Image (cartoon, rainbow over all chains, first blue to last red; front, side, top):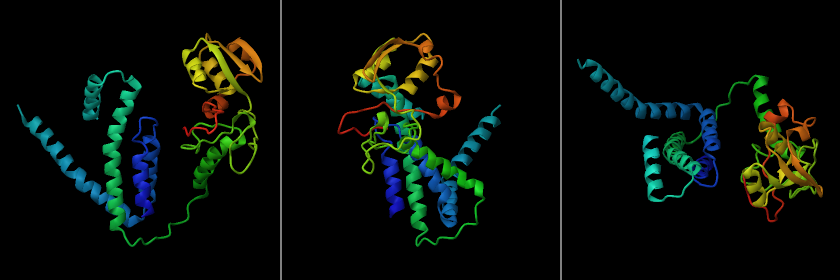
Length: 70
Length: 203
């Protein structure tokens, strides 16, 4: 619960015209990624791949399609 | 990013009068809203998937790793001991440690080990409009920071009051023997000094 509250807090504070906290919040998120337990880290890696792999395949497909043109 | 830039440009045309800095800031806020939001959702999702949390003790870290939190601790301690006040852990706080005064709950005077924050000046006039603007907004400046700015711009001058004494048109040559050295220039950054009470929370 504390972790999720911290995530929401550090997500919200940069959304302000009066301050520049996205660098700090980005650093905090990176530290969270580095310090979560190994099973959660593996789940994060799997989830990220599920999202990025289709994008990568689509991008590779469009490149090969363009290269195939005369 | 292209979408964010386009959206901000469109909004700027619709609502003119915003500064360029605010446009850049708005683009980054939009990017953060998407990228940071995605990171937040994914991290929360994997954390919930991992419940109940089983903590596995990590192998012993080499000693040098502890240098990083040690340096971080020193950096955060710097406002109290008289070093930098910017880029320390007083974000979101209204902590005041400059000019030998403090509003800290636990001690009546800052426990300086260094005197950089002791010399605070009020700018009266300057060749640099931003310095005059900052002063008119009610801010004071730490003298070391002023010296750094003058060093960067040798043709600039500034008239200021320090301890009741007015120094007229001070420039690089005025501080020729007292300019901050390389380490001081790189590591000592100071916020504006605000003596008003209650003090506003600023970064």
